[in-house]
Each structure stands twice: as structure tokens, then as C-alpha cells.
Image (cartoon, rainbow, N blue to C red; front, side):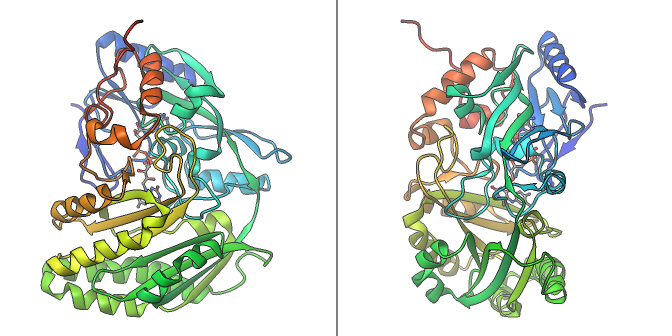
Length: 436
Ligand SMILES: Cc1cc2nc3c(=O)[nH]c(=O)nc-3n(C[C@H](O)[C@H](O)[C@H](O)COP(=O)(O)OP(=O)(O)OC[C@H]3O[C@@H](n4cnc5c(N)ncnc54)[C@H](O)[C@@H]3O)c2cc1C
């Protein structure tokens, strides 16, 4: 019987004909050739942390999590060669042993490195690009089962954020930075004051973001900057309260109550946002960037031009409150530098990311679609791994290098071996260039 596969949020389910678990590049190539012979489509899978059906297939699913080693680390250049299936958490720990670190990360680190790169996973910090902006080169098995070393040109600009549509990445070279300590301060502030001073707050630290619960006027601001202090110096007890009790246990209890009694949500959210007190964490960067998420939810996130941040947040808050939408999870606002990967959500512009969430078991679609309409009006690009309702037709005009990505895809996967429902929807079928 076919093995069932489910994503982290337990909302995407598929039954691949086979799940391959290669432990070497040769085995990855053999798996692709085997699938081709049997006429099966192929999808690489990471840790299943995407909220969309991006990793789903009823063909051959290729899980490279056994390929999880750091192969080389050069502390003098910061260049590190790793296998594609390593988790971001394991990478952080291994890099520490070499006196190195990733310059920026998202808010969890359980994803597989190649999975996170494929959707342009990002953290916050206007001076820093998303994870994929640090990829110097990679190796990939194409749709014919052939291996390519990609270290520049259109192939690299396409493959850095490849949506699993170009091939199966087996190894990567990343540019890392010397190991550093981060001081993170969480401070609740009035939302109005936060929006008024947002530009200065974003520019005034390495990594700045905020969360706001609908129906509340408190923004939970999170500011992290590089520090010379000793790691683990302060704040252990408060931190435990904040990270484990409030962000997980209390958050879960409020979300369950809100799901059972939606009319209480405005009061619950206002109360929850007042429970947050200032806290500080000082530790090695990879232990500060990532937090634990025990409460499951679904999510949409849009990348918009940085200057539209305020307009977007106010429009989403207004939408929820005007329509009395039952939303128990916060809106999260982050910022990154622009970059040049063809399908990076931050392609060519400084970017503000606005993420919205809904607790599992609660209706999300009307909320997400209404927010998507707001983001459409702001030139928004959806996170490839988070829910959205776009298609190739609506997306092509938002990516100036769309056709260059399509050309690389046609070269590496001429028969559409790596297609699935998601790529059919958001990229369209593989198109061979018209001759002449
Ligand atoms: C709790 C939680 C927190 C999150 N926080 C953030 C955040 O802070 N910032 C952010 O930007 N996103 C965040 N995300 C989204 C997440 O980072 C992305 O969806 C990411 O792509 C998931 O990585 P994964 O390893 O689970 O990949 P999967 O979801 O399994 O797959 C994603 C894509 O990667 C491709 N892929 C996987 N392995 C390979 C490979 N070896 N070669 C080629 N393609 C491959 C798959 O084919 C698929 O297209 C979060 C998600 C969750 C559930």
C-alpha cells in the first residue's frame, strides 16, 4: 500500500507511489532515472514545513534527509559546502564548531536547508537578504537524472529559489559569516507609535520585526542586534515564560477557546497581547533566531515593497475588525534586503513581509482571500511555501525575470519530470522556447 505523506500543518496529504530516501547523489540520480522509466513524476521533499501543496506528488517523492553532512568549512573565507538535506538547526550547530554562522535566519530552524531555499525562506533585517542570497553554487540532478554543478549565470539565479521545479539539489556552497552573539529584546509598544516610528526602528538594529493581534492596539516588537556579551548572559527565567509558556501553552489555550467561542476572540486577543512583558535573550545567533512552534496553524505571507508596510498593516487590521473575522493568531511584519534570484519574493526591491495566520480547524479562506486582494493592490508576491490563490497568469507580471526562469526550467527539465499540481498552477507547464 502507498505510504501517506502529510505536511507539518497536517492539511496537505498525498500518497506518493514511492518514497525514495537516497543517501548519496548517485542514488538520487538513480531514483530520477527509475521514475522516468516508469513514467512517474518526481518531487523532492524537505521537512514538509510548507503550507501549500508545493511538495506533494502521487509519483516518486525524494526525501534527501539522509544527506545531512557538512562536507567542508573554510573559516577564513566563510565558504561552507553542505549536503542539501541538513536541517537549518543541525547546520547552525555544526557551523558553531567551525566558528561560523548563517548571517540571518527565519523564526524556526526545523526545515531542511534545500527545502527552505527552494521557497525563498527569509528572516528579518533590511541589511540582509533571504537564505538563498547566500548560495554561491550548488549541485543538482536534472529531469534526465544527470548531475550539474551550477556556479553562476542564469542557472544559479534560477536554482537559488527553484521551487523544486528544476531538479533535486544534492549539495550547496553557502557564504557564512564569523560566529556571532545576538541580543534580542522583546518589547510591547502601542501599535500607533510603532507604525509612526517603524522606519527608524527597522534601520536602528540588525533584525527588527513586530507582531500584532487583531483587535488589539499593542505591537510586540522584537529587536535583535549583534553583541559582544557572553552568550546565555541574561533573562533565562523570563525567556522560559515567554517562549514556552506564552508562545506555546498559553497561546494554544487561547486559540482553542477562540475556536470554541469565536465571539470572545476580540477580548481574548486584547488580553493575550497584554500578557506579554519585555524580555531579553543573549545567545549564539542560531539559538536566538529560531523559536519553537508547538501550536499548529496555517499561514499566508506576502512580500510587498518596503514603503507599503504601514498601509498593508492598517488595511489588514481594519479588514479583520470591520468584518469581525474570527482571527486568533497575530499578523507578523518583517523586512529584508532585495536580491537577484529570479523567483525570489524579494527580487529587485527592499521588501516588507506581512504574514497572517489562522488556527487549525478554523475557517481561513475568506480571511486569506480578502488579505490577498489587499496585497494584490500593493504589488504583492506570495511566499511560495505559504497559502495563496495565485496562478502563473497572475504571477508572471510580478517577476521581471519570469521568462529567464522558464528558459532554465525548460533546459533542466524538458519533460516536466518535476511537475506537480502546484507547479502546474503557479508556473504553468514546462514550455520549450519557440525556435527562431
Ligand atoms: C512553523 C513554521 C515556521 C516558518 N517560518 C518561516 C520563516 O520564518 N520564514 C519563511 O520565509 N518561511 C517560514 N516558514 C515556511 C518554510 O520555511 C518554507 O515553506 C520552507 O520551504 C519549508 O522547508 P521544508 O524543508 O519543510 O521544505 P518542503 O516544504 O518539504 O518543500 C518545499 C519545497 O522545497 C523543495 N525541495 C525540498 N528539498 C529539495 C531538494 N533537495 N532539491 C530541490 N528542491 C527541494 C520541494 O520540492 C518544495 O518545492 C515556516 C513554516 C512553518 C511550518
